[in-house]
Image (cartoon, rainbow, N blue to C red; front, top):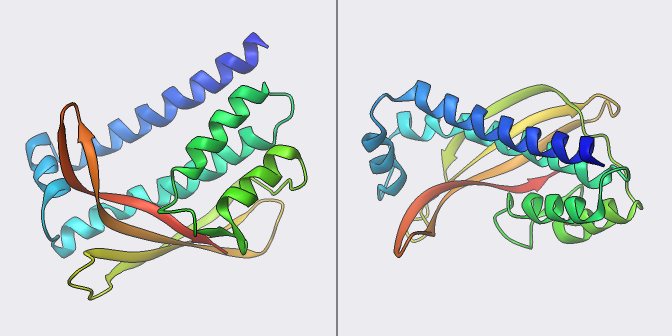
Length: 182
């Protein structure tokens, strides 16, 4: 049991370390990153910078999925991984393989579904503007396949402005979300 707890804690630490090291490599000035996150619109260069995060979101989803489906891991940890996996999606109407995300994750947790969780052959498609002035957002796709399943998969990714609380202050920032995995 302790090994599983240590494994999960190590997995979380590695993902945070990976995110922090990648973000610090892109821009030595963290203040300019804050300006980008809170900007009303983004340049092509800034939109392209979010593409790395899009691939990470898909990888994170499958990492969480491997924890959710592993019955050797404590149920509370698996439920926490399910919650975190659901938070990667833009809303509850999103789907995975045509199934609403919550239902898909519940089926994985209960053992009714046991999808392949190891990704290979990732390919990023460029983001493009949705040209909707009221709803500032960009959309892109990550193509991939899993090791056990030779089917080519596509994850539709949204880059959109969302409110986020920083202490007592609420800011509108750009965030990357999964919208669909098919």
